[in-house]
Image 1 (cartoon, rainbow, N blue to C red):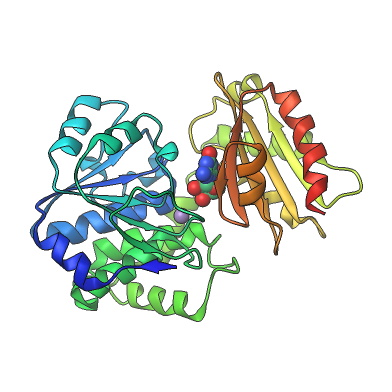
Image 2 (cartoon, rainbow, N blue to C red; image 1 turned 30 degrees about the vertical axis):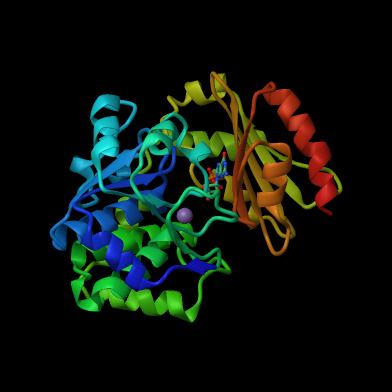
Length: 332
Ligand code: 5GP
Ligand code: MN
């Protein structure tokens, strides 16, 4: 855990007007929730914030307040680079390495602006000036809540900020069921609900948002693509580019799929291999002490958390699968 003092955060914020908020490649709900919550907060305190994402995110997040002001670096490289070059301060949210930004990382690297990292991933690289980092936090949204309250107190948290934070905590904890959830997480959720947000509406907006293609892809994956590594509590899916195309795959359509095999009694490690034109994108999940962050770092150019990590492979889907089924045995 590394949390710098609120005095140092206040000092840097006092001097800053134009503030960039940057989050990771393929932003997930925690990434967008934390970024947009911080955006709403900074607006309220009279700053000029700008959320910049490296690429697109699922459209079931379009309802989030401030969504229409987000700059996508892939669509608008010039505008994003200009803001980053000119801003006074950069917040880096929900990631631990510039590698997670792809090309946008080069812009941050060039920028002389001080950086405040807020994150809960393991072993952050050394790019930030100040840190609000805790791997025990359930989500970056939980840390942003603490950060906002630490700066300005609970009263500043309104329904807009609360909706963003609630959504990120909800998804990063698998709807409040992972071991990262504590009494403290629920206390925060209580505070958020007191602003008047409706949890049933947020759950519905996020989870009842499948397209027909997406649910059919889920059925196909469960029925035809789920494999178990013989003799080990390991289950995984591989999905080829062709198979994904058959279901008109759109970004986010396989979000959550990796966790389904945990419903099988005894399964301790799950993986999902998605083939794209350039690479195989991998998701790893585990239960208990089995460390997928280390595994992903060591063998699959990735990282993340102990129980949830990701990586990639430039080998073929089949070669990647074979490599995984051999190496995963070393975890037991
Ligand atoms: P997911 O499987 O949902 O894509 O990612 C699971 C976790 O691992 C997330 O917390 C994500 O930030 C992290 N992660 C995913 N892909 C990568 C990667 O390529 N590198 C690193 N360092 N972390 C990743
Ligand atoms: Mn997160």
